[in-house]
Length: 414
Ligand SMILES: Cc1ncc(COP(=O)(O)O)c(C=O)c1O
Image (cartoon, rainbow, N blue to C red; front, side):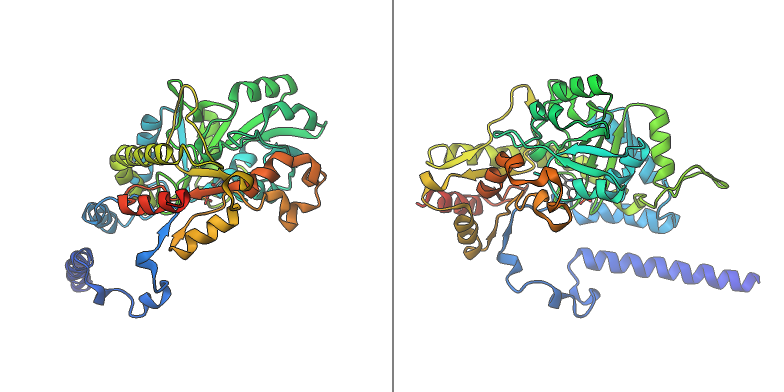
């Protein structure tokens, strides 16, 4: 027995040394350690492509330290120390009371609706990523689409009241592109009609209204830490809440409903963030201010360079808001610009620039939702118009000046 365990220790020791060598070699770019056929899975011209976004990635060797520690602890998930630390550090960084980490934003949305026991009908926007409405669908809730405001593209607060029925239990607005919704008006309506508010704040990491985080409004706010977001944990997400009891309930629900080893308090799900994701988040937190500053600089340049282009509109900063510049949408007026949005989208593509039409088509146009009364044409006129005009152009830390100039030149048709 002693001999066996000794042998095991020696093996593990050798394993750790070998892994250390592998990690060093990978960090040094030793391609022979990658799976043999991995390159076959990448597009041939990938290195030339300019995507709408790219993650800010800290130096790899810094992440390796976290990996080594996780390897040694053998705690890979289930509320490990990195998970706990990231919840604490994020709540301090964002200026919010409670953060509950999730494996992605969609599961955070689905769980948020469960946590508040939302049923019946929920008023929401058709102008978002499809996961916003899917989260309602997965809970058996009927989405009721309301049109958007023509400038910042958020749910039009002035149109919410007309959509309320006896079955309405909540509002699910989205801070689209990270620009805050009319939070005061939405709160006032919700107070009057007794509705809950869950903000899809997946674009709104570190956005502030006056001096407070936009995540502090409403009952719950949902973040996504997907690779395309300003702060990423590969995949990931969070629910932000204001009181300990709700945080506890959310934590039970994301872990199958377990309150302790033998008590299951409800039909929970598995939506836990792993230690690898949490470690990535801790590392990202060290660099995120730098990433945000780079984004602002790129946005400022676009605004200067595109300000005189007839037929192209972009979003001005909002009063008293600290933005995160997570997206740079432009809106193309074909009559003035001479080309329609899709022509510009294709022109970019021909130049290896992958701009994206966020958000086209509208969620209300997808087969699952098309038959809803609120999807009917006349109901969502502004959203329909904007969806035809919008194009999000590349913005991310590390976007080269040359590449930014290329994007500007294409739009200015210099
Ligand atoms: C507005 C919005 N809601 C929800 C999601 C879903 O988040 P995730 O991809 O982390 O599941 C995303 C993005 O991915 C999003 O942009």
